[in-house]
View (tube, rainbow, N blue to C red):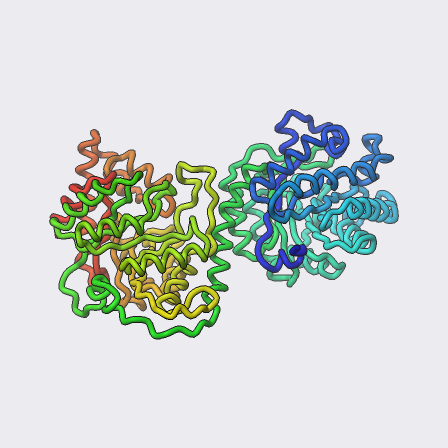
Length: 619
């Protein structure tokens, strides 16, 4: 069984979300002692733990945040301190045991409230004794780790760490809460994240972090600063929004799971190793966070995968890999190539797709590319579709292949099969997350991202498989990748563009571009790679509604305001379609003049191949 520290070293640990928020949402008032529910309603607590586990949590916290003897005294429950903590551990461990993967249980310990910064209201000995007893009870109950959370007093948090480390031999996560400025009682008096990290490191905390106090955005800078100030793992449990204090427990009502999850992704990129949710978060938030973190983990795995040194055979020259490779390798190209995207059939009948390819071939299209479950909707395999199309029409095909649905083993097996079938042109992408599709129960895989996948295919071209295995053969794939000249974070897009080239990309297809200045900016920022062929994406807008959908609901797509205004100017759907064609033609006429651009990547709106041919008329 992987111990907690090994798990920390192997990747990101996803924590759970709030207990109080979920209990409140189920009609349990905030003036209750929520920890007493371990004894009175254990099934409710277990169900919440299970919901978080099912959402993707690797680490769940016991319902014992205020279960120290001092806090329980207020409710007349001090004599039940041991019982409440043991039961809290038992419930969480029971929920964890029902899962088919290892779930770690953290014994939650909150502040006593007796010690604030430089102000002793009662003896330190009393507080230390409370922390010691609670830690011992939780350890007796079988938890894997202790988490000290929502401490606004650095003095009290240090005392808690020291007391717990003396009492038990479990790992300790220590999380300081930075003052939101709403209550002078909890002022952190200007203490910096760097100072907190140093103090917690010095007193022996195994994981150093922050939770509560503020919303997701405010905690990002804290995580970045803590990560730079310590070699210890960093944890962060952000609120969904700004919180309010009730009976010593923080509450936040109302949240956007996607907003919290997006910041969880940024925490991971900033170096956080344990990421969970605090006030206002719930299983839906954690489920969304799980999906977002999949992409980060895939990127991190890809970086490790790419850095592995594997001796490979010299790849087959590009011009000898396929007809497309030969055309791309030719110098002094006299004309621009055209590739058109054709979605595979929803069922088993490819006849409509084949007829569409025949029409496009007659119209002068050079290649057709077959997407891999676009928008996470299940369709026929792109490899099978490409084989059927190529056999029936002789058209050169480009197979899209994404990381979303398959682990590394499955990807290598599919790709070797594609090579054996003579399908040697690939477009390698990460893939849309399942959430955007119509099968919400599907789980994303994302062993690696597109950069890792490009590296895998480059190794196959060099005769090496996974783990450096000698394949006794070489594939001869022409490797394509995606780019987005209109990306909001253009510097990150350029970084990934260069990483894909370094991994082995031979050509690029861009997302649809509607403004020449966006393409010009991207080409200037990547001019040192002018030898890499680029196909510029052009998608004729079918209507205003279509434009709004693409802009708001399709990952990676942005429709500029100027283009939206043009679509708004047309009153009817027919007029809007004509405007969409004109916008596409205008863009195409400007793109074909650019020496750097080797071709056009056309998307038929709603499978209307005639619209593609109409756009091509201006060539």
